[in-house]
Length: 166
Image 1 (cartoon, rainbow, N blue to C red):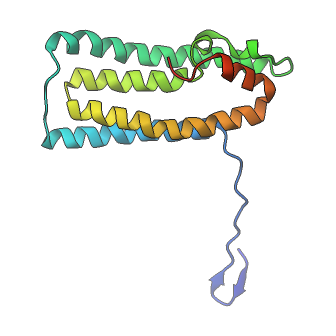
Image 2: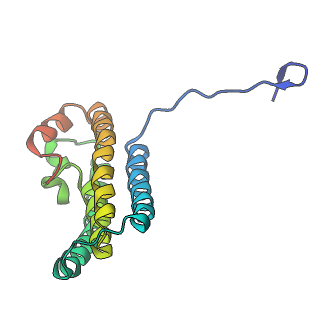
């Protein structure tokens, strides 16, 4: 590190790199993680339990299991897109869960956290999960802009035909 004045180091700032889709995904995951932590902490002070045991015992595990399975299915399907970069068409984007939604990993994450909240029988945790979903949608718009820039017209055609959420 060079110094411009005696005793003061020169700081070298690197230019900002373009954001990637995976970088933005990490923001969504962080939001949900913080939502879980805040929900658990708030639940300690506001333990509101109104979810019937039948609903808690059936829907909770169902969502908790469906979430990671949807994420895994989406990740396996998106690998095919990486292999077909030379021949892109809107049909290339329509593989696996991407035929039904443009955001299967976000939906999977939401299902997983919602399942945990239902099993916990915590209204507060369900609330923070919904708030996390809303904040996460801010990053989804940024992610879609990157994908449109990267894949162009074919992605825009795909975006018109397949909805963002279920």
